[in-house]
Image 1 (cartoon, rainbow over the protein chains, first blue to last red):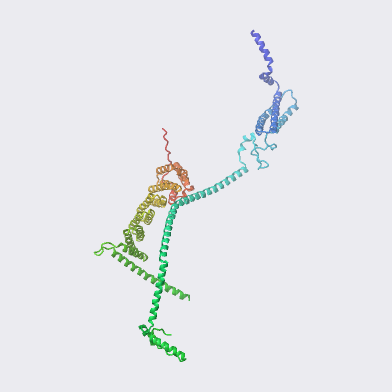
Image 2 (cartoon, chains in turn purple, orange):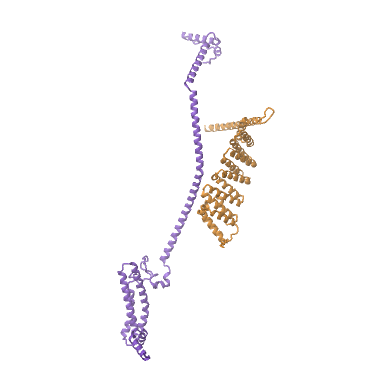
Amino acid sequence: MSVIDILTRVDVLCKKYEKYDLDKQWAGADSMSGNDQFLRLYTVVEADIEAAREKSQDAQSEKNRAVVATLNAEVRRSKAALKAEIPKLEKLAAKKVKDLSKEEMAARPDLVVALAQKIEDIPDGVTVGRPGGTWGRKASNPLEIKLDAMHPDDLMRPEHYEQTEESLALRQEYEMRRAKQDEGLDIIAAGLTTLKDMAGDINEELDKQMPLIDEVDTKVDRAAADLKNTNIRLKETLTKMRSNRNFCIDLILIVLILGIGGTLYTYSFSPFTPSYVCLQPLLMYQQVRSAHMMDGAKPLRRNRGLLFMSGWSSE
Amino acid sequence: MCVKILKLGKLRKLEDGRASVEEERGRVKVAQRCMTKANYLTTLSFTRWVKDWANATPLFEQAALNFKLVKMPEEAKLAYQQAAMGQIKQSSPWTAAKHMEAAGVLAKELSCWNEVVDFFKQASALYVECGKVQPGADALIRGARAVQELKPNDALTMYMDACRLLEDDNREQMAFDTYRAASNLYIKLNKYREAAVVLLRWGQAANKCKATQSQCKAYLSAIIVYLYAESYEDALACYNNCASMDVFSKSDQDQCAQLLFLAYREGRANEIKHVISTSTIIPHLDHMIIRLAKQLPQGKVMSQEVPEMDIT
C-alpha cells in the first residue's frame, strides 16, 4: 500500500468518526455564537437537576435507611455542584449573542432564577420548608432542634461557629451544675473515706480483742470448773457434819445441858444453899406484903435498904 | 430552825474534821508501829539468825497502806519496797510486782525520777518472771509515760523494751499504742529518722498480724516523716521498699504517696501543699504526723530527676 493510499484511508476514517472528536466540536462551538454555550450549559444543568430529582424520589421510596442516607448525600452533592454552575449561567445569560431576539435575552436571567429555584426545591432529606434558615441565624422557634440541618455554605461562613445567647446560657448552666455535682461528689468521697477508715480501725480492734476474749473465756471456764468442784466438796463436808448420828448426839447433849441447867437453878433455891440464905429476907418481905395486901391495909413503906440488898430496883 | 440545822451541820463537820485528824493520827501510829515491828522482825541479831519475812511482810503492807492514806509518800514508798522484798523472798513475784509499781507511783509523786524508772523496770521483770508478759509490758509503758516529760531517753528505752517483749511473745497487736507513743516522743525530740524507723517497725508488726490498715498508715507516716526531715532519698527508698508489698501498693495510702512524690519531683511547693490539703487520707493519720504533713515542704524544693534506666 502506498503512502497516498494510507493518507486517503486516514482521512476517510477521521471523517467517519468526526463526531467523536470533542476538540473539533468545541472549536466549532466556539466559533459559533454564545447562544449555544448558554443553551448547552442550561441543558446540562437541567439534565442534572432531573437526575438529582430522580435520585431524591428513589430516596423517598427507599426503605433502607443507609441507602436513603447515601442517596440523600448524593443529591446534596449534586445540588451543591449545580448551585456552583448557577453563577456561570448568569454570566452566560448576560452575554450578548448574535441572532437572538431581545425578548429571549431578557428571559434568560429569569430562566436562570427558575433553574436555581428548581435546584432548591429538590428534596435532599433535610427538613423541607426551612425559610432559608442556616446555622447561626435566629430561627422562629429557638428551642427547635434540627438534625442534619447543616448547609455546606453555612459551614464555610465565619459566624457559623460563634455562640448564640441561648447556647452561652446553656453552657453556663451546664458548667454550674457540673461544678455543683463535683462538689457534692467530693463531699461524698470524703465521707466515704472516713467511713472506710473507721471501719478498718474497728475491724483491727475487733481482731485485737478476739484472742483476749478467748483467753478470758478459757479462764472463766476454768474458774467455774474449780468453783463447781469446791461446791461439791463443801456439800460433802457439810453432809458429813450434819449426819443423823451427829444430829442425835447433838440433841442428847443439848438435853443434858438443859437438864444440868435446870438442876442448878432448882438447887440454887433450896434451903441448904448459900444463895437461899441471901435471898431469904426478900422472900419474907414478899410474903408479908402479899398478906398485908390481902387484909386490905395500906401498903407498907418500902424498905429501901432491904430492896437494895436484894438488888431490886425501885418501883 | 434552818440556822440551827446549819449550825449543827457545821458542828458535825468540825467534829468529823476532828475525827479525821484523830483518825489520821491513829493511822500514823499504827503504820509506824507496824513498820517498827516489821523492821525488828527483819533485823538479824544474836537471837534471830534468819529474817522473818513471813510475819514482816503483812506488817510492811499494812504500814504502806496506812502511810499512803495519810499522804506520807516517802514512808509509804519505803514500806512498799520492803513489802515487795518480802514477797520476793516468799516466792510471790506477782504481789511483789504490784508493790513495786505502787512504790514507783509514789516515787513519781516525790519526783524521784531515777527511782521511778528502776521500780517500774523491776516490776516488769517480776511480771515476766511469773510468765505474765502483757502486764510486764504494761508496767514498762506506765513507767515510760510517767517519766517521758523529764527523762525522755529512759522513757524511749522503756517503750522499746515493752515493744520487744510483746514482739517476742507474738502479741504485736498489743504493741501498736506503744509504737505510736514512741514515735510521737521521737518526733517531739526532733529525732525524725528514729521516729521513721519505729514507724516502719510498726508496719512490720502490723504486717505480721495482718492489720493492713495500720500497716499502710504506718508506712505513709514514715514517708511523711522522712520528707519532713528533708531526706527525699530516704523517703523514696522507703516508698520503693513499701511499694513492693501488694498490701501497700493497692492501698489509698500508696496513691497519696505517689501524688506527693510527683509534686516533689516537679519541685512545686504549691502543688505539694495542694496535695496535702486536698488529701482525704492524711487527715486519718496520727495527729503528730498530720502536723508534720501540714508543714511540708521543708527546706528547698528542687525538681528531682528521675534516674534513667540502664538497659544495657
